[in-house]
Length: 444
Image (cartoon, rainbow, N blue to C red):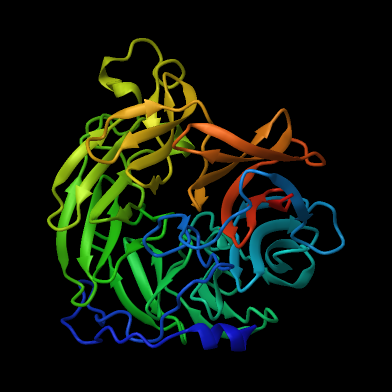
């Protein structure tokens, strides 16, 4: 597989000169080879460095869904006990890679495994020990798995924080680099560089893991991005609580910042914490809200040229400052996670008056409409794909967003109340990570 992946890579000269980055590190990121994902690739958490989560060439399984296969993270077990954090499925050239932090008799470890996309046959498995780290809190190495198309890259905490590149064909280590601090976001790649969320982001050379640049204004020790920064040809977008920083990719200098003034239950008038934006057609769509603490927040559309606000949106137009009673239980309104942009509509999960839902937001003016379907978190060929734990079973759905109609579904019956993780679409398959293992759905 290594040979074919490298053959599909192409040289991309982006210019490696420029002024020093804000943190005093070299600038000019992205001067080595690039990678163009094919139909059976899904190389990172949100497919690409723009965080679109939309595969531009994969057909997906379509509406006639069936369960193609399921697989546990560890060999010889129907279920991996003690599964904690899950990676997004990474797919390269028809092979699915996944990681999970697992506790067993030997302690915590990050298991990285490879499976055939069509059959689910296990190709290899690798365990990396997870050690406790003083002063850094809980770390989640499995969350970080990503790829530049030629190698898998994952954060490690075995002997202090580190970064490791693994061979897609065997799982063997190609290089390792020690880090000053661990990171929490998935790895995303573009133009020969690896980007991770930090305080606010760090970029590494994909070839050897050496640090290229770091952008960390303020140095807030409590802020650590769990979403990867959003990267375009000339700009890197990273979040700092209630602000988005747009940083020139060549010089490392800040181009602009954008903020939000959503009232939140947790932060009051300080503004809601931004998730990384999705950049499509000159606009950055950024959700402000944290599902982990059930806080309130909305979405902002930002002109990427100057950082000006185009519109804001919140489910049902609710104003959290007007709530009566307990807003966390009765009248909560918020968007969560990161959106999908398909045609002229922004689709996003959210909560309106404490009822979970899926929303369609007009990309032109921010008007919000609640949808009848559950929607999805990834997309391909005009359909959205998502999974829920309906009546205890893992149920995958294909949704036609234009018609607001579920056009197909399939359920994994053997797993009881699985916890759903990130997902991917590659070729004719839709793959979802859960605490029980991987589930792949294909066409009948």
